[in-house]
Amino acid sequence: DPNAVQMVEALDIDKAQAQHDAIAQAYRDHGVTVHYVNPPTTPTPNQMFCADLMFMTPEGCILARPASDVRAGEERHLAAALAREGVPILRSISGRGVFEGADAAWITPTQVMVGRGIRTNQAAIEQMRAVLAESGVEVIAFDMPIGTMHLQGMVRFADHNLALAWPLRLAYHAVEALKAAGYRVEFLPDVDESIHNAAFNFVTLGPRKILMAAGNPKTQQFYEGLDIECVTVNVEELYKAAGSIGCLSGIVARERV
Image (cartoon, one colour):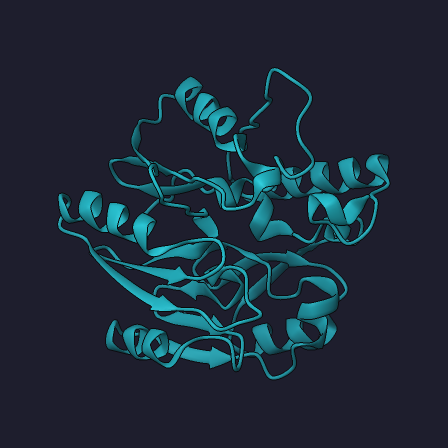
């Protein structure tokens, strides 16, 4: 039952694997090193969505604690993979806290935005606030509207001063925080391709250069109108699992440019 594991349809595993391999190769083609989690046991269906399981800081990873029962425990396999690569764990969300990494984003070197909603609660935000304060980092938290899952489904960053947002989803407080941090905020003119083909679920490869789902001509034209270079890969089969490139990619490190 796909719904029991939070998927839209059953996947053709061979097609999904080929598309996942193509995403990894696209990263390599653009100078990105790719690591795999490779859990020692058969992976659970959602283990591939690494972005939800981690939030990186310059001092190490804040390990997520998924709110969904069907994803409980996935984070321990990601922690083991990080350990193999020598990446320290700065904090593991614990107690009554639930947190998924796709609910947080760096907006400046000293500010992190966190969305409070169905996957991240106030208890987790307080834990993040405490640990990040030790590094001089401010946490800006805000409530997300009903019908949304993750912060990164509402806002993504194409450059150090360009944020792209989903209209009617991103809270006013969040938009004001972005503008105060020096961002130009551009809203998607049409969300149909984002709903049906993951047009908004991209990963930034560099300043105004993104890896996005193929087959989204209207959205790609919008991005290119903002001087964003678009590298595309087919994710049609993977999207049946209710996630795409951004969800699949846990960013461990970036070079500052």
